[in-house]
Length: 326
Ligand code: SF4
Ligand code: SF4
Image (tube, rainbow, N blue to C red; front, side, top):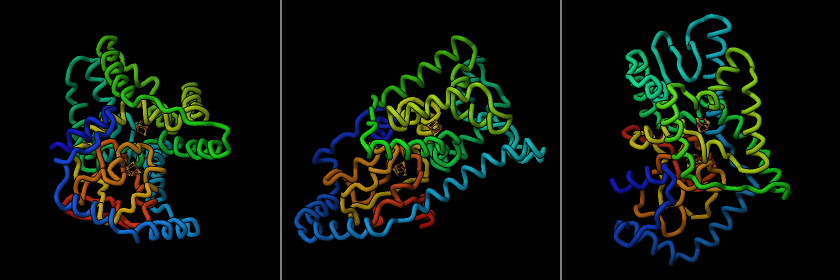
């Protein structure tokens, strides 16, 4: 329960808490002491880093994820263009082989704007809620959202320019995303209009792909340029209310990234590739309070840390089914 509370607090923007002595299990205390006493680990870490420098680890999860993301968005496009009626509508509201689906954040905004529970919308919302609860909440972000894919590409551009010392990252306070979530909820309620939908790059891109480009794409391009030249992954990290809504849904999901302290070398390769590195604070030496832990609700289950970890300390697991594909 304490872990869940902290996971949600971090999702809402709190900094991860340093554990106190009482938080540790006896097994974790023993393991931390053994790792500290084991002088061979330093040499092993150096060997591992050298090996990694010479043998690039393939990003298997990224390839799988990009394939799913592109195919899902393509299915929307083809359903409309060819009128095959498999996945009709756009990401904000759709019908999959006849079943109504509603994006959770859009549904929330619509209900706040209408000030009533719209029955048709409620059925679609519950379907999607169960689906994304099972699939891990923010999995929507890295496996479906078209903006995520563009932001990953612009992140590469940002990293390249940062390496050349042309740009530098300007982080913001992560609590801003929670404030935005509240502000857009209040705006929908007060104005009776889903204000956020007009600036959501997720909706703009989804509609542009299906129905053709519009002027709103200028806003999306502005966001992407801002992320390249000023603040890395700014929209998803500090602004998007959709990410927060799905994060709340995923807080108690059976799909998790799991962490094993026994295998960990604490060299933090995972944190370097993570869009939300605060969720990986537990990999810092001395922070893990148990031998096996799971990563918090802000995790998008992108699998990049799983690919980056050379010692298999991180894995994608489904409760009851165990580890997913390697
Ligand atoms: S945070 Fe928002 S824009 Fe970013 S991937 Fe998630 S839904 Fe898309
Ligand atoms: S913790 Fe791992 S799976 Fe989760 S967002 Fe970060 S890199 Fe992706």
